[in-house]
Amino acid sequence: MDDPPPGAARAGHDPVLAAGGVLWRRSPEGVRVALVHRPRYDDWSFPKGKLAPGEPAVVAAVREIAEETGYRAVLGRELGVRSYPIHSGERLKINRYWTAEAVAGAFVANHEVDRMWWGAPEEAAARSGTPDYTASLIEAFTAGPSPATVPVLVLRASPAFAADLVPMLAAFGPVEVHGCADPAAAATVAPYVAAAGARVYPDARSVAEAVRGGRPTLLCTPVPDLTTAAPEVFTARLAAEPLLPGEFAVLHAWAGRVVAVGRYAPYPTGS
Image (tube, rainbow, N blue to C red; front, side):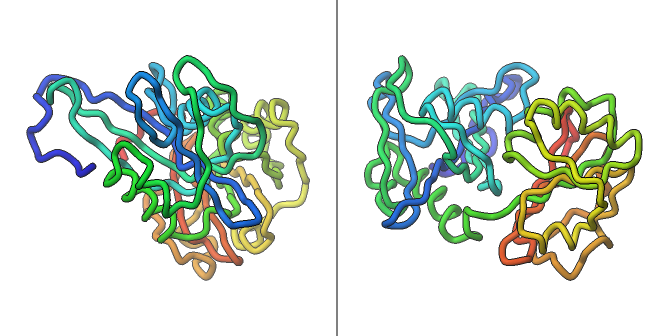
């Protein structure tokens, strides 16, 4: 579904924020994606749902996928934003989507979703209740880098946000934690390490080493310098603004190169 024209949603009404993903898994036949059937609307769609008050979008995406499908998902690169008017045009609904690999779980029917379909990406739009909307997401999913990218998380240390960062970092899967010899960095990642059971390695790694290493990795330093740290491994655009305290970048690597980048923080950044 195309975005509405300016002014389609009436002024004075905050948008409804939602998050979800194109849930995918590997199969002998190739990549398969999931659609869920919602009896309330009698339609097929990608799993998504509204953000709880104060909930980061990446956390909401993982939670909503689990609630609607029964699968635990690990987020990959972001697929962008889709928006449309609701309530007779009075409000705008803004949905953010990620690639989301199903890594554990199984479908169990629930009050929101009674059926689930797995199939080839090119078949999803024909089944969907909003074929144009679904096709645009499938195009982003298939035309971009492989969904099986490897995350390298680069976090600017800030112990004040350590607890808030736990579910956000976990949304991108279990990662190895390297370095963090600095006391502030160690304090920042300690709650995540304890919650996720992440392995901590004392050796420091550069961004380039982590990207080329091909393993999910978390690097935490007081002031990461991404713009000059490893320009030779970047093919994706990287924002020039430095990371704020508690903000982290997810570098999605494929074949030793960064092919997509996302930036997230446990507070609104205005970006």
